[in-house]
Length: 320
Image (cartoon, one colour):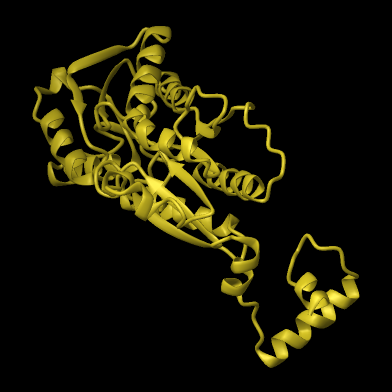
């Protein structure tokens, strides 16, 4: 029994040939380890709680599916994910404490801090990804959205554009703030002209992207920007549809750029120039660190990890 147990424990010391033989026999007879029984011994639930800022507001379907897919790719086979919405946590004791081995927060807003510090104070292993936080006692992996958006607008400037607009994300979301700051910084450094009537507040949805782009296209031609920066790709897909419905050709008449690099951005017509958010890297590192913390391994929590997004050049930004 001890040898079989070791064979199913990747970190246990056992001869490679012995492990291979045991796993082959287990596969032949259809044996799988009883993790409930193992949990009684190890005091583990083999469940990771994944908490989003919100599953409805600001979390697009494409971002959600990419994040969950990446988390599962990095998850050890003997663990399951429990997907949750911070806004719906009305009883921390019932939904979090004694229910999971660790918590991974996919954070988008400072409003998550109350929940994050509740997890921290309870002693539950914790990792926060997506949003940069300054607490050096919390394991944190973030995307440098400021630098990513700045690179995108720098590219727009290099293509000869001078007048630009923007459809932002949800007001107050850290990603929205950082992307607007990157936009402003590049506007200044490249001496661009932001068209105030074409700066719109969105909500990261394609529906609002279409509505706000229609408002921009309704401006007199001489007041319109030559390129519109979209807060994310869902917004840009909606903006593309608004252009199509109004008989405006992208990029011949107006250019668009997105953020995230979702699947649809590569198959839209025209394909969307965008900034690739490192969702997979953040999720993979987050799960790796969280499992290590759960297992009592040493993790350099004080080492902040900030991953640089990448510009993906496709067809939606014209050269003027």
